[in-house]
Image 1: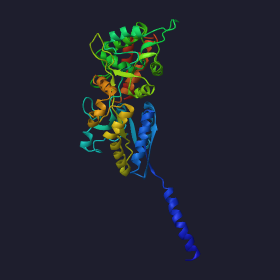
Image 2 (image 1 turned 180 degrees about the vertical axis):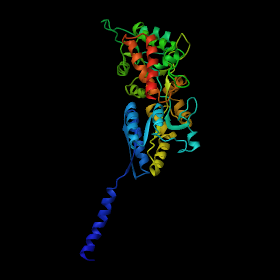
Image 3 (image 1 turned 30 degrees about the vertical axis):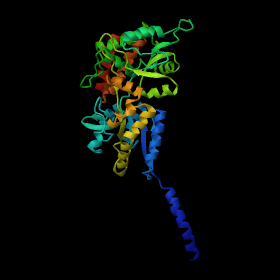
Image 4 (image 1 turned 180 degrees about the horizontal axis):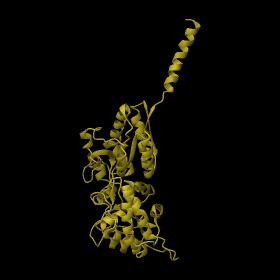
Length: 411
């Protein structure tokens, strides 16, 4: 073998190795708003799934709920964006109207789609006669969470809440300011007030998804929440999400109205918590109706070919019974698959059973695009009640008028 052949004999394997090492993998990206503990679970699942698909690199990226939707729209309109978007069902309306996500009934067989809950709420999200989101959980709703060290049994009615609240609320150091409250929650955000509108017999939209905010139910709900702070004084007069959460974690509030995204934090804080329905409205005999929203995966419309097939398999994996039970055990979610929902591990979990009981009186989140404008319309008028700018009656009128105007201007 001459010298040149010897050199080629030595170099060619090296070149092949360098080429192999430098081969660029296709990327499959998931965007989500999952909590840190859930991000860890998802990351381990993606790495496990990746073992069967060495051509691809799987990763996830966190965005807040609003950022995820807005950034997805911007990226997908440009032909880019993540392959999967995990989020609440109300993403579906805006994304489907812009044709940025795949209809899924033709991508997955009927038997798979039928393995998800249809009662008490449909898990997968339909919009304009198409399925656009495959759920990996249901619920995501507000409940009454209480500290068992401070309360033996949670209140069943609002009058009972007020009586209990007067006993629990205290000025410990005698400086004229309340140190401990009966209840704290982010009541100045409309989403956290909506259950009370339902409890007074109203709702935020009608069957055609038109806003129904200028009603006696809205007025009474807002007045009642105002009275809890200013007349009965059993909740803080000023309270946002972070303040409420801090008060509850520091044992300075016996109860909080919050969703499953927070329960893991309380448990990690060594709190002995219970979950119950938000107390019944005495005047109507109705339970407050928190919004129920399935969460799951939408597939970017820009994905095609072989990559789409891999993404479909990934969705099947991430929504499988085994994976849902893993998330449920570690993050306290309510599974969306029928067999997972009926699994003994769910039935024997006291917190999940209590959360399911609250869910049974909830109402499904509307997924139409106009809900974005309804939420925006509610905020200024409703929050003006607590700053003394408007009465509940005027706020109801203002919210309705603003909602109708925003919908007309944007749709």
